[in-house]
Length: 224
Ligand code: 5RP
Image (cartoon, rainbow, N blue to C red):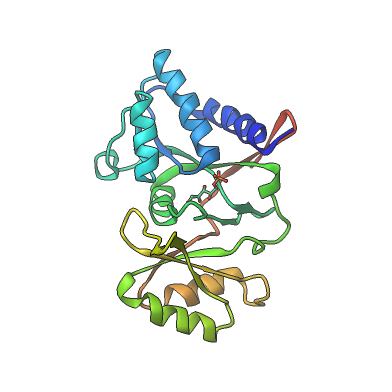
């Protein structure tokens, strides 16, 4: 079965956790889109929820599907957030940010009671790091951060959008780094990266996930 179908299978399993009256965090990316589509359908059939979007793209898709999107400030707290991932390991540690929304995604996850990750089976890994880790940086500092990350052996590459620097919804840059060969514990690496002024956020999500739903073939497997 294709990755696309596995994404859909996982998304359809995840939306079973959504009930009327909830405030729901909506992730970003192609897997999350299937979840948004399913919620749009549920809303048409009478589900009453409020939602917080993790990106402008998600906000647009959700609004177009009739989902009531509010701000994080209005929501105050979220009951459940459903989001995708670029990699997920057996300890529910993630690499996220392939779609550039890591900053808002991490903020929304931090403010959510239940965080569900949905993914196709290719995202399930025994060790994180084949996927390059996205780092969000303040444009003022990006070039010097790249120099520092180079010195740390992390092979930084600034993400581009054609000839232009890629910009996040917060108008920041993304630098993708290679953590595969580093021996540093992930939590220490996260701390080291966050200690560099101008690094706003990293795509390492180490402790926020409560439930992982992986689509494999026709089945969705849920791990708690
Ligand atoms: C966006 C993300 C996405 O969840 C991640 O990139 C997975 O995307 P997709 O579902 O399209 O494979 O972190 O910032």
